[in-house]
Image (cartoon, rainbow, N blue to C red; front, side, top):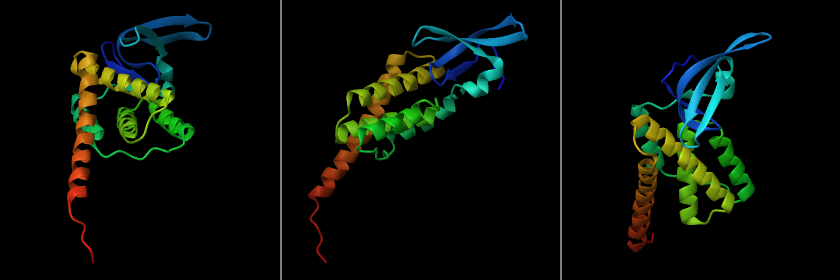
Length: 180
């Protein structure tokens, strides 16, 4: 995939940023082109060889239109996570390390619901924080707003879904059971 200076991109390990320049470096086997990416969340500058963009998994940041789908994913019913913490953390990490926005949204949604229903270990909480940060950073980059606002948006979206589910469960428990 080819990118240009100014493009908003997501590095699967470092998160979202903007390509600030292209640099050309001379090596014994020839000249190589690197994308220089500023990652504001971690205050990093990352150099990605142009020829390894696909191998690294770097992608264009989501579009504004995709943002609605991300919010819908956060508000949707969660998938059950494994009760075994090692299995759960491995499953969550596999999704997070892809850097795909919808998988990150699923991780955040599922971990928040799991926290509501049971509990999260310290590592689970770290994975939730990492997923939330990456998701909020990409949303903020796309919209040109503060990341803190996006973290609040993520939190309120999932909290509203949980509150709605809890209210529905409460109403259902108050209905008289029907005997056959």
